[in-house]
Image (cartoon, rainbow, N blue to C red; front, top):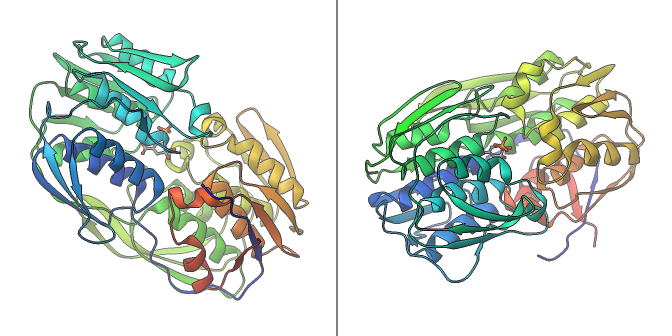
Length: 435
Ligand code: S3P
């Protein structure tokens, strides 16, 4: 990946319609379930990001034909539950934790061996949270001290398990449910706090019997998946940058059409409203079994809050954006119970704290969060640490800084949000290639 640095500075008040790309979590799952379904599934609104394209490439390597009739559309020719073929080359998940963890669950029950690899950031992310419970099911997976690459040994009969997740993680839950499709008997997952339930909803849509409610899911091995079409909503996590940007730039008003509003994803909406944000939902409806709506956000003065810990899992990907909102709000924001941020694409507590300090903000890091003293941001230079969401969050910070914010190495933005720069500049950002 070529290195790409950005410079972000105050632009115009933000205005317009911002159509953000398809949901990453839904796109990954749609590809995987369609791949092992019987028949042809069409995915519309597919995220053309590097993460989801990496998953498509892995599935193609495993013998699945995936056509691209147009950008944002895939037709997956399912091979059935036992139709995947092994590959002698490593399967490259790129930067995608979701891709690697879910594929590990899917591959644990196959007859063939697989090796899963990732980029420098993914190679530092913990995998025992997936491989330990999979081992309880009978899987054999070698790691490099708990990190990728993962060697998944095929031909292991899997047994269903009842497993209480030690940390709230939709990726781990989903990996175990995918392995459970190949297991003998029931697989039941209990979560310490409900997480996004796309795997459960989509398994049901593909015709697999599954019982689920917030915090719990149970299925039995030995059924079949039947092809179905999937409409992917716009990604709330991508909309998040614009929600914060329009909230903090005076005179702004943005409309973000048809954004996925699954309640396990919209914690930031509640957090920003607690801080005084003016965000309304219009045209609330259901699409493809998911709640969607247009988000309309207008500038409003924000104030600091003690963030309720109960919101943390529902906004786990939105903290980098929230840190920026808190850094320019009046008063103090306290974040607790968010230690998971330390094992995302980067250590998001440390990378945000270091970056905000470089812009003159007062922020104290804690083991599981931060205390952010709102104020003004100055100019400066920050590192993305190969983390797409860090790069986009500091692009938002540049809108209200006293001078240009240089963001080093923004190439990973393309993993989740291709076209971010153009879309952002189209509504009033002044974001440029810093050369
Ligand atoms: C995801 C789950 C979350 C989230 C990630 C996507 C998913 O990770 O941070 O971006 O699609 O299941 P964890 O399961 O590690 O919390």
